[in-house]
Amino acid sequence: MKVASEKELISKLYDMNQKAMECISLLQNAFIFNSSKSLDECEAKINAILQAEKALTGEFLEDAKVDPDSRGYVSVPGYIERMGDFIEDIAGCIRIKIREGILFSDKAISETTFLLERLQNVLRNTSDIILSRNVVLREYVKESTAEISRSANDFATMHEDRLIEGLCMPMASPLYLHMLDAIKGIAWHGQKIAEKLTTA
Image (cartoon, rainbow, N blue to C red; front, side, top):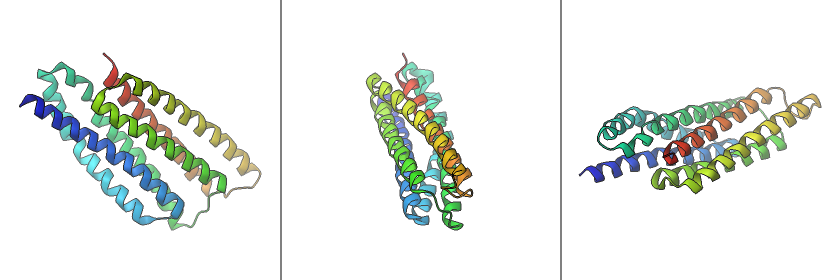
């Protein structure tokens, strides 16, 4: 009974992380095609994540009292919830972009798409770590997160140069920079999950 219960909790946690990963794909679709429908789908998934977090954290706390191996999982629902907050931030920026018809430069679009694809990769591996607690995958997540952070910082600098040169709309600037910060935040929380679940 105990093992089945723990498996069920891990399965719920995996599902939470999968929802976050699916949201990144929906955000990418919304950003490229100005799709409010994709944002609505993402919002429904985020609501499910936020509703699941407290109950799942409590269940892992109870489980950890009798099984020390479960301790690593206790903080993971909270990290996924924080990812959800950052995903909501990105969705909010994209909603403003769509509603106000704000145009992003081709460069900003390709840079954002690049980062969202890398982020999906991080979350895909985070899902695998939830199931396997694989140390090799943890190192991959750490390297990928560092790459995302480096690239986002470089893109922000290049964006400022484009802004000065008049190659992008000033209205797009705060939205773009806010999205870059949120992407870095999601990746950071993915890395924290990877570290929590693979540290002896």
